[in-house]
Length: 87
Ligand code: SF4
Ligand code: SF4
Image 1 (cartoon, rainbow, N blue to C red):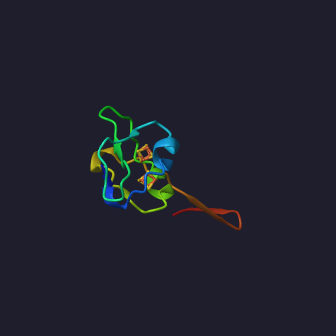
Image 2 (image 1 turned 90 degrees about the vertical axis):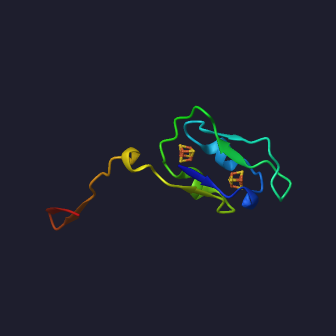
C-alpha cells in the first residue's frame, strides 16, 4: 500500500519520474496547495521499493508493504578477521 498525504504534495513529480516500474501517475484532483498529487496507477507493478518515499522532498508518501508481498529479506554478512557471521 502507498499512502499519499495529498495536501503535503507540491507536485514536483519526482516520485512519478523516478519510480523504477512506472507505477505512479499524477492525479487529476487539485490539493490544497493547488497542485496535482500523484496516485498509484490502477494497474501497476509497485514492488514497495520505497524509492518514492525516500525521494519525496515533502514527506508526502509512506510505503507500507502488504504482509504477503514483502520483499524477501536478504541476510547480510559481517566478516571479522576471516570469520563469517550471519547477522
Ligand atoms: S514503492 Fe517503488 S515501485 Fe512502488 S510506487 Fe514507490 S517507487 Fe514505485
Ligand atoms: S515527490 Fe512528493 S511532493 Fe513531489 S510529486 Fe511526489 S508526492 Fe508530491
